[in-house]
Length: 421
Image 1 (tube, rainbow, N blue to C red):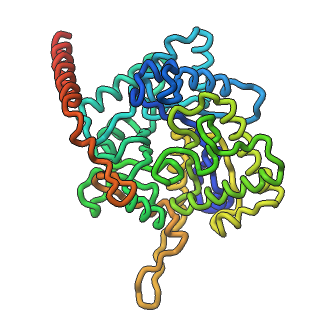
Image 2: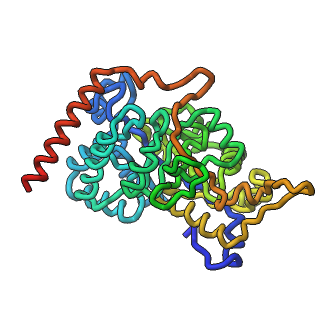
Image 3: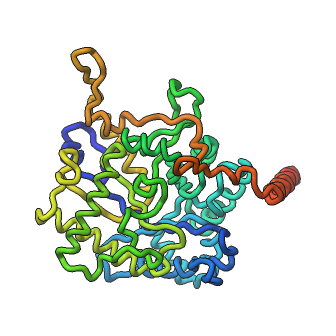
C-alpha cells in the first residue's frame, strides 16, 4: 500500500518525504445538455457536440482488460443513467469481465446517482430520489455502493449537499471543482484547497463525525475538473501527446508536469494529491489516453531515478521522492485519512516570535491536523469580477414547476405503496 498507517513516528519517517500523485482517469457525461440523452449515448448529431457515451465505456473497458501493459490502469464513472443502459445491453461474458474489473478496483464508481444533480435550484427530495435510483441499480446489479461524492460540475455547492447528501448517503468524502474565484485564490495561498466541511452554523463549534465530511477540489485546484494544463491527452484536446517524443523533449514535458504538480502540492496538506485526468465526454479513444498516461507515469519515475530531474527542484525540502500511479477517488480518500492519522504521531506545536505572536511554520501549514473547517455553503459561484453564475436560480420556471409537481406525485405514491404493504 502507498498509504499505510503507522503505529509510531519512527515508522513514518521514510514515508513523510514521499509525495503520492494519484492519476484518476474519468469522464463527465451530462445526462442531457446540448443534445438529448439518446444522442449522447449513441453518438448522434455530432455537429452539435462530439460525444458518444457508449463508445467511451466500450473502449475504456477494452483498455482496462489489456494484458500488454504493466500498469494497473483505473477508471472512474459517475452517471448511472448512461451506465445502466450500456450495462444491460452487454453480453453476459462482458458483464462478468466488468465485474472482475470492479472487484480488482480498476473500474470504480463515484457519486453513482442517476445524474450529477445541481445544488442550487433542486429540491432535496429530487436529489435524494435520483441518487437513490442510481445507487439501487448499482447495488442490485453489481453489489456496489459508491463511497465518494463527486459533484465536479455544479455551479456552487450547498450545505445540504455537504451533509445530508454526503454522510447521509454513506460517502466518506466529497469532491467538486467550482468555488468563488476569490475564495479559491485565498485557499491556494493558505494550502486549504481541501479540508473539513461541517454543517455547524458557527465556526467555533467542533464538528462531529455525523455533521462533517472531508472535501477537496478537483482539476488541480484550478476551479474545474480537467487535467493539468498541456497534459490533456484526449482526442478532444489540442495538447501535444507524449508518445513519439524524443527523450530530451519528453524530459522537458515531464519537468513541466512536475512544476504543475509542485504548485498543486503547495496548495494542500499531507503527502497525497489528486489529478483528475479527464473532462466532458472524454475517453472515446481511450487507447490514446492510456498510452500517454502510461508514458507519463514511466517518465516521471525514470527521470527522477536517474537524477536528470531532482525532486527538490519542484518540492523544495518538503518531499525528496515521488510515487505516481493510477488511482480512484475512493483510494485517494483512504490515503488522505492515512495522512491525518499518521500526522497525529507528531506533536502539533505552535511556535511564537519574540513578541509572543504565533509564527506559522511550513510544517504546520501542511500538517493535516490543521485542516480548516468550512461552515455554510459555497454560494454564489463566480469565476471573475461580475461573473456570477446565478441567472439559472430564476430561469425556466415552467420546467422547475413540472419537476416539483412530478416529485410530489411520486412522493404521494410512495406513501400509499408503503401503507399497502
